[in-house]
Image 1 (tube, helix red, strand yellow):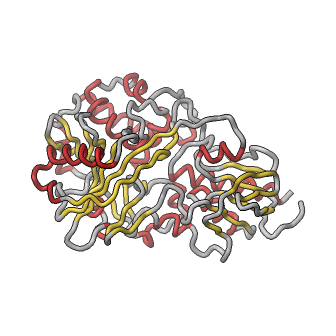
Image 2 (cartoon, rainbow, N blue to C red; image 1 turned 45 degrees about the vertical axis):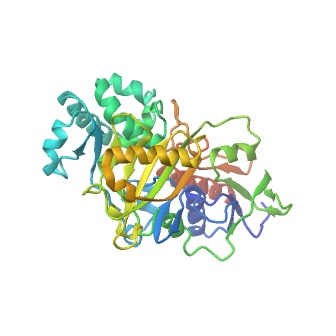
Image 3 (cartoon, one colour; image 1 turned 180 degrees about the vertical axis):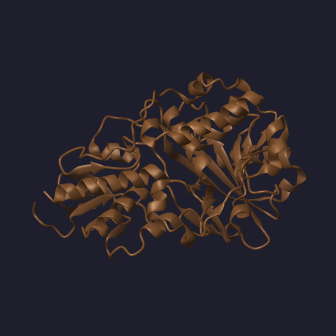
Length: 418
């Protein structure tokens, strides 16, 4: 192949593109990343508003992700964990459901919360143990079905499905009826059992910033949009032609489909994320709060500043609320509905909470219906000289974005060596 200034053109500076670039850089292969946004990170970004750190939607880092451990310096990120478990809003009261191994002081609350039977709790322990013992590839090669059907097949009661699994997993998959792949669900359950759910001191946007450290000047170009691509080159919407020996598409699924001229459509799952400033946190402990009653608009609530104090100025608290759906409602309607429900939960203190911002994210995640592909397999060119990584044809999430980026880099390196 003819040598060019940039052996590889990477389209997209999200986690998949950045992980691909990191692997290429370690192999001494020149590359250029082309990013349509003015900032890197894809969907993982953090804004600073009045001294508060606002992530673009509710996002966390699962510390047990193998690829995160490979690429990220956890000490530099200054990760702080949520408490292991959750607070469930059920029957108009809050109940702590904690990991008894790490929070034995909450054993009674965990055992008596009105979310299901003793048998349900034993089934959770059994299922968590089973998925931890299994190899990851085996989980993604197991029979696949909708998660709601999988839970019923495992013998879980309707009560625990509705009051625990629904708010828990729809908050992760953004699928209101958890029709998402049971392979994905089992992997998520495994990761929750193996590590912590954490936030970096400077927000989730610190993750792509760390991945981009020490890359050569000019290797990342932002605010440039690719209009079309061909083997060995891409054309920007400005008309500029950029040549390379290989092209890696690391964009969101719908954008990847557009650039490939594919008729394949990707259903999207959206969310609304509202942030509030308060004088104090409404709960004493840094748990994720889930709406087990399935009434109102709120799916979940967190207090990021209770996990990582740097998310809020001294003496203040940052509250994050996630709403699934309702994307067509205007901001005033959304805020009024959410504030009304918050008042029912926490009382008069909510009057003093100041609304900071609402993030409206139409493509927060792609739909993940069964059967989902095995994301552990290596990447192959989708066309001669053109590779794809990220959520298109794979599984969305931090782990799989980074792994697919590395797999794409390994495949490109193999091609360039021929």
